[in-house]
Amino acid sequence: MSVGLGKTLGTQETKGILDVLHDTEFKPHRRGKYTEASWWGNKEVLNAFGEYLHWYLTTMTYPYNVPIKGCWSHFYKSRSGMMGMHQDKFADIDASNGNYWITTCLVEKSVDLIGGEIVLAGDSYDDYEEFQSRLKVINLTEVGQTAVWNGETVHGVGEITKGTRWVFVTYKDVN
Image (cartoon, rainbow, N blue to C red):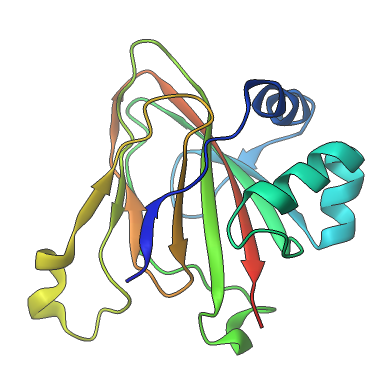
């Protein structure tokens, strides 16, 4: 399992991302009661976020200076449940055998936020007996902070019991 904190994104860049998110239609996600928006492909990300933010995200999200394959954003409210443990699987990256990286950035949170921690648990469900011993919790507490993990990492989000949390995610294929 390869996980950890990534580079913190700048205040102006995080605000720029948030401005795009505010102008985007979010729809209910199939896994929970939270909402999401997505942009697939380097060109669509460039069109949505503009040349500067596209360059910045390409440069500042891991692996650095690798083209973006896709982005999405989730908006979580209190009492919306948790995002259960899962591995991200997408049709266009399944062939990469998990050789891709996810970077999640906290772009906005309410001052009363309780919960919403990222829970990571290794690279498979195959050894379930050891699954719980690998749990790692990353709590992004400041806007702009990021967490990074590889494509095979089993992960989820703890329930938000108070407030709101908005994240922006990039994924990059390293093949």
